[in-house]
Length: 191
Image 1: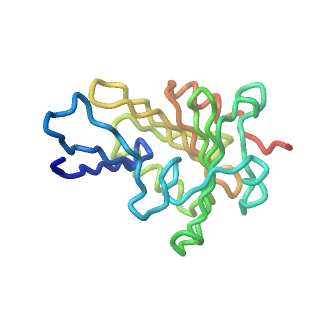
Image 2 (image 1 turned 90 degrees about the vertical axis):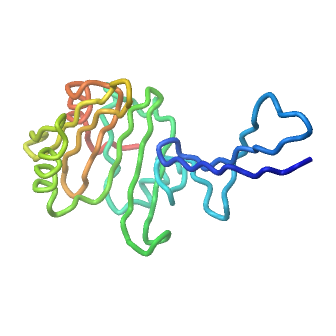
């Protein structure tokens, strides 16, 4: 066998690092094989580079802030597919904790400690992104970004706002109006 090499692909959006075997025997293969690799790094398998999959109960115990979720009549806990947490103090020494709740329909809720300058940040982002606008949720500043589903991209829509000491971002392949409906149902829930 003559080894031509390995082509390494990394994709944050797809959450994986892969190597495609491009070696050849005497005759070319009909198809390449895809083999996941870690390259000495933590395997990347979720929404955060240094995150780990946990239960909802674990996220509540490990997070320094409340785990806010949409009301049960909008997105019930039974529809949660995965929960992720990243503690940058452990990974990079930064000290920021993030939590992501991924629902079976693809909706994602991201939680992190609210930045002190959220309102000015939202206004700046809205000036830079043509599909973004600033508004309010629960009387607090928020930013609404329309879903980009043109031929070149399939970026989800998003709604971000601050509730108490937590910044909540709702992502999904839905209209901003639907994402606002989900965001307006966010609450501290038992269980």
